[in-house]
Image (cartoon, rainbow, N blue to C red; front, side, top):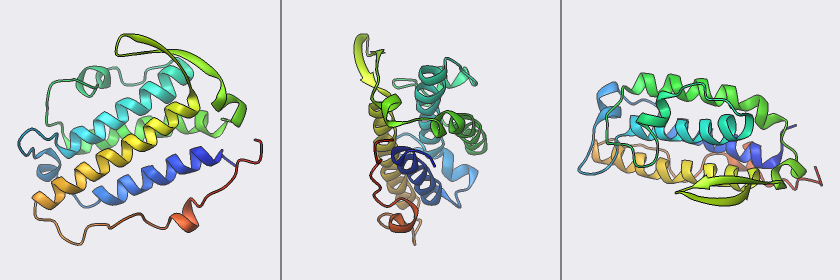
Length: 173
């Protein structure tokens, strides 16, 4: 069974998908003022998954264009919604085998990383938490965009966390 932190990430991913279900291509590419469009948000989280789970975790980059198009600070763009989802599925599926083998000791190991030109020592546990919280941030932003688009009956609060991702102690894994 995957580590409880990985289960939380997977639940977060499923909530992200639930919150963005039913978008049209035009809706996914629509920008309001200085807000990013939803398709860019999908690509941006895909970039972060690739950066943390594939590049930092395994030393591989599957989709190099993500580093140019969706990195933090990248120029605003309105990528195709379908292409963003295809990239997201590609990267998350590639990340899953690595995530499945994470243990508490592995999540607690410190690694040297570069952030904003500074060297920091972080654990993969920290990186997975950053990823989870980043998903929730952009899900909220994307749901606000959906409200601006006039969408109603959007998901409220958090889905079935009690059954799908309830609190689980790691048991010293």
